Length: 270
Image (cartoon, rainbow, N blue to C red; front, side, top):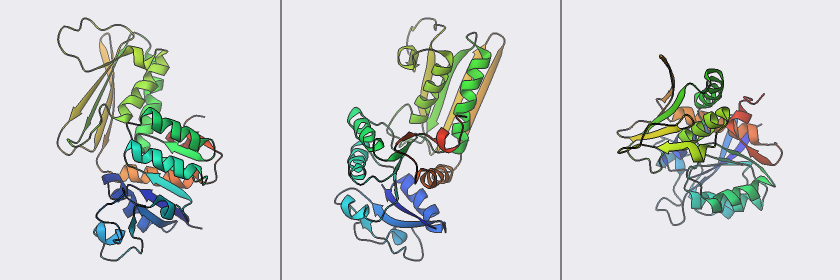
């Protein structure tokens, strides 16, 4: 039995990566390729647009009404305002959504809450299976090493990434802060400049680097007296994120309404 998938933001970097895997997956059927209103590619076959030799039989649309008609689940990689519109449209139809959009604002979060009240939603800043194992290990390492070890987080992405720090770095911050029992907002420092003084015991530093075509790197540094532990995840291809997204899409169909994470998808909360 195939899963009928719509992709919102189909021509973006992640949208294209997900599209390629969906089109090659016998368990999936692409039913819609959605782009922003008035896009130049509207009405063109998505297979041709992503460089396939054969047409996919699905054309780009900017109509959510049309795109959601046959969708069992929607995969979203867009901008917060577009995600908000999608969440509202899916809420009225009870359609599950997998959201990878980052930098979500308060209005978008409210729209997602309303969607989660009637349909299951998987939200993650990063869909790599390895990253979520990193988050799991980070929390455990923080607990085991204790307060004598200072925590720093370093992330690097390609030069075109628009938000900083990355959503994954913020999730890593949240994970280690919770493990240490401190407030991530009150105790985080994003970059340092000038005479900032000595770090406090509860402080967690976060540094964002941008350059080149780096897909994504995240390092947790736990620095203690006489020793240092570093845990790093490096993404070499966007395909790893796309594979995680599709795994989440299959998983979320049929689940109860609510917000879910990749930790739920991977059963890391047991």
